[in-house]
Length: 286
Ligand SMILES: [Zn+2]
Image (spheres, rainbow, N blue to C red):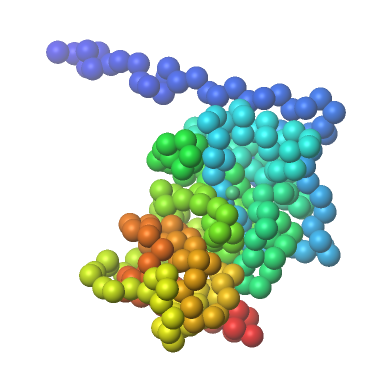
């Protein structure tokens, strides 16, 4: 048997790259902020950052649409009122649509650490993935690698701390699920992107849930708010609290996303808080 008999065209050699839509004719091409962006497709949808706010957050999304071309068209065409700074395709190509200095429109109604103009303080990355409504496939490794490289560059250029690389669902827990529990935050953290601790093991426990009304719920809400989540401290485990716990689990305890604050969820939250930089805690509680 010769080596040649093992040779067969790899899937990669057959795979055609997704053709990108052409930039809209009257949109001015700009120089990308990073050399790892292979394409620029300028979006018509952006503005100025309010009060010259300098971005110090990276917000990750999935596109949640059946295909990449449709998502790119949606994010770049005038009148849709949505955009993002970057789109990361499944094959790892990075397209820039809005210059980092400008305010892209990706967060919508959102809040984090007391701030609610998230578009002004963040850089938005749309990761091409059909999302929960269309079968929610795994994120391919090469796409994750591209997101890591892109985030690392932004963190360096913009001085973004790890704990401010967040999911859309973190800042808009009542409305959004993206990039969802399949997004490999642990892999990101292994490459220095994002704040992560090993989730505490899931054990049989009662857990706080809808209807619970006591000091333990108040403590949970205070801890979530201290981390940055927009949750009123009422002592009542209401719908908002359940949605925030669900968002927390999608990001930090993805093995079980059920909106119940069990022992594992509470312990994971406590160890995240304990590993925040000291000055952050002071700001968040001040
Ligand atoms: Zn989103």
